Length: 178
Image 1 (cartoon, rainbow, N blue to C red):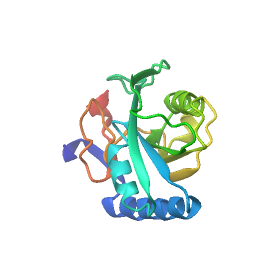
Image 2: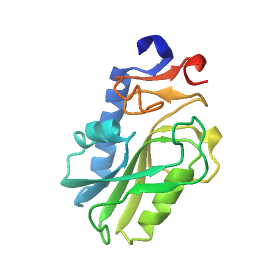
Image 3: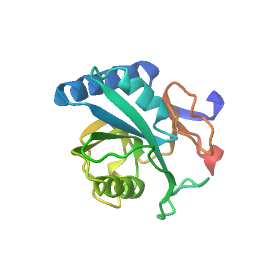
Image 4: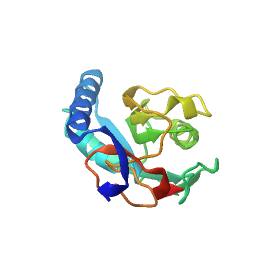
C-alpha cells in the first residue's frame, strides 16, 4: 500500500496539530451552545472522530452520505443521497464536517438540503480544500489545509475504497489510478 504513494502531503503529526487547532476554534465559537456535528460518510469519519475529541462542548453526532464519484477519480456531477440523517435538525446548531472539497457539487447539494431543514445555525468544516477545482461557490467556516489539484488518499480518504487507513495524507502514483 505504501509503495503506491507518490508523496506525503501531511504527516500524522501535522494532521493531529491542525485538527486540535480546529477543535479549539470551534469550541471557542460555539460556547454556550449545544452542537450537532454531522459527518459526511465515508471519507470524513476519521477526521470527525479526531475533531470531536478536541471540541470541548456538549455535542451529538449524526452522519449523512452522498456520492458523485462512484469508482472514478472524476465527479460525475450528479449527486445521490445514499444515507440521510437519523434525527431532525430544526433549531439545532449544525456543523457539517467534510474531508475534502473538490468541485463543491456534493457539498453544495448537502448544504442546501440541510439549510432547508431550518437549523438554528449552519457551518461547514473541511479538512482539505482544492479551490482551483471548484465548480460551485462554497462558504467554508473552518478549513484545515488547501491542497494542490492532485489525487489524494489517506486519513479516511479513499481511492476505490482503499487507502482510508493511512495515518497521513498522500498523493498516489498516477499508474495506480490511471
